[in-house]
Length: 367
Image (cartoon, rainbow, N blue to C red; front, side, top):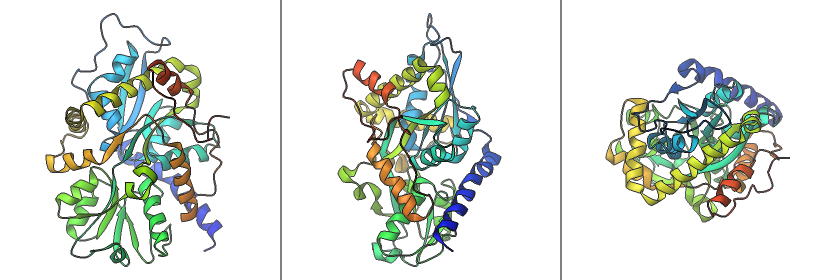
């Protein structure tokens, strides 16, 4: 199949993904809280807005959102404007919720952000801040795969066609000289697109030989006897790459800039607290995971997963450009015009007020 045909077909499949995920979870399930985020007495609404709806995944890579909701940092920053959190299973469903105005602000990976921006011709979302780096690993069956070259000929899971880890694995495999059809996943390595929730069971049953996955899925596989063969951070300069961004609807940003600044202030305060109190932050994130999903992560999964991530306000914009190039090389995306995907003015305003240095948009700022 010509590359152009594959790319068009790729867009069709990726565009259909929100419909599949929405059937499973609607526009995201309402997050639960235990009262820690109650509005303070005498607090006032920001911009006169009753509430702001934020979306995130129940993944530890979305630790800023998990901790910020659990510890009430967002609610404190928003005064009497109520935080209404919603939990999503995948990026496409969160983008769909943003497009339909079911949420206003979201924590999301780079590939869904890029796809959402490109498919709307740059008219819907903006990336307004960073959240996390790292937390992605290639975990394998040590009996079947003892070295990187042994990955050839095996079955490796990624979370979803065209998602951030899927693109990363396809790019890495291509750098090894292996050929894989990006749509079918067939080739020198068989790529199995598998939901993070079921991948550890698929590994345990032997239906996949490994997986390129985010935390805590990677550590869940290790708990099932897997071995970390490669930490994706080792492939990046200074071991930094964006895994989670903060996005906002452009119309919401225009209409409610003070609310956006307040959410960013809450995110900044959350990241400060996480980095100053890693053990307490880990427990807070796990408590929110339990409240959202009904099940906490065991220590043997939580501890190594949390250690592998870095929480940062910097969106690491230059690495987003690189990840987009990887998607193009993989045949999942035509070369995109990402100029305008970032608007870091609100974040830099908050950072300046806090005496922190500004962050850079790598030339991809709002036009």
